[in-house]
Length: 334
Image (tube, rainbow, N blue to C red; front, side):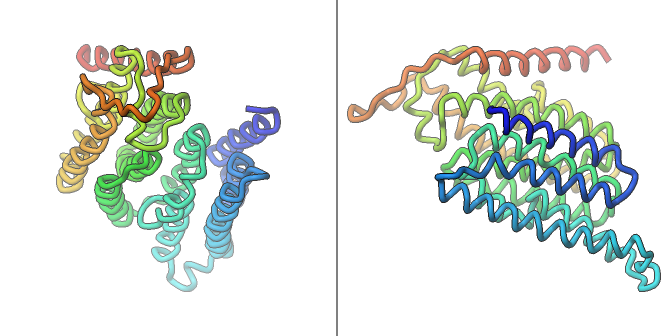
């Protein structure tokens, strides 16, 4: 990361802190705008038409949602919603505007369109740091009926949408849409639960994105031509199973805590989340399958890449597994 991008990255961190610490909607809007503008240099590339086009698309979508958000907070500022009896309408529209900014379903098509032009490291920022401000603002005005509807929609779209995908980026994007349903569920439990889930999800995602970035992977069929250390294969396998929420891995811990809470509140929602997690595990296994084959497909007309994982990948994967073991032991001690 060069100096200019490091400056914009620090500006992005500042915008997140601004949204978290703000006590007015106007400063929250400013934080969202700074967050959007600080991400644009990561997408834009001077001599690449595709990346420039995607940067414009991203800017237009974010601008439309920001204009709508500003209009709604001005209505609240002048107390017009009480005069017009539009309280529930305004709250629902604020949530819908933030859902559009997030790229969650049903407003996910723009996100599917731009992810192919992003590098894996940019995609990591897009799935983690870019989501935090809007998710925090959604937690301020929770409409329970609306959030339950968003949980169901994101759960179904995220699990079914990734079934017929060959692009690893699109699979990870639909996985992100599916995890929005767990994030919204965690918000209804508590703010601390949401932060806990987001931290663990980000940790697992860092490990996987660094792996994809290091080997420059784009499609599933590339995994058949990649030969790496078998122990490293095992670590990546564990990270995918952890992302899918399979016990006793790290990703299961948060989903287990949320499930215990929801069994008492809304058993239908948690049943749907659990059933759709099985579909998610199916297309995670599609990614895992080439790595665990005993006899890989080796075409004579292509080159097989013998790759040795670098220190950066080992660092993140071992860090992820260490936390997995630590939290699992902590569970059994309680």
